[in-house]
Image (tube, rainbow, N blue to C red; front, side, top):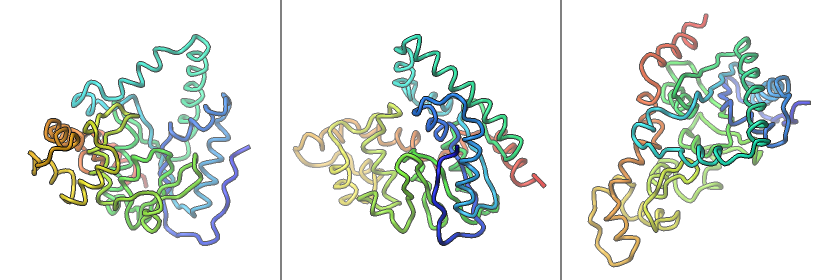
Length: 279
């Protein structure tokens, strides 16, 4: 059976569901299920019904980002190392999962636009859709992903639903989730990094110190411009020593600014063909 998502009492009209395909598929992986094509489709359709979506768009990774690998060869290298340490049983289960995932994508392609390109991540495709909402006629968007990186895309008409927490992140409830504003979120990430993607932050700068720096200087780029910072605290000296990491992290993590570079012109043309010229 599909997962049971409660129907919303008040529905927004004219919305589009944008699904982080592999991220959602891990729901079944974590539950040890290897036969989930129909459950996956039913779950997507249930979510679309809950948010009264007129359109569904599937975004899918095809390997890790070539763009980010060129910027930083260590990008997501921690995941590759983790997979290399799998037992034979774990490797077999992972292979079976991906075989079912590929079947799921093939089934979805017969129903909805599936956007997937070599060396491009779903994050960037979703960011491109949000960046050009008007071009694609996406009046309102519900993102389906448990990846908090997708919160970089939140705005007045874009919100995220996490199947893991069963919670929504919207502009209205943003402060329930973060101690910085939507505009400051990218600065927080650039200062603290992303351990999951193997993107280092400034050593000694955690969320609280990052927040303090943002409050003092305005954003991470302004912190960079102010280097060398005065002060004897170790984390201040660390900022001075590792300031270039801030610039690199913008390129690695600022989805809205760099998504088109990460996707490439040819793939963007394909997206436009599928979504604008689909009729």
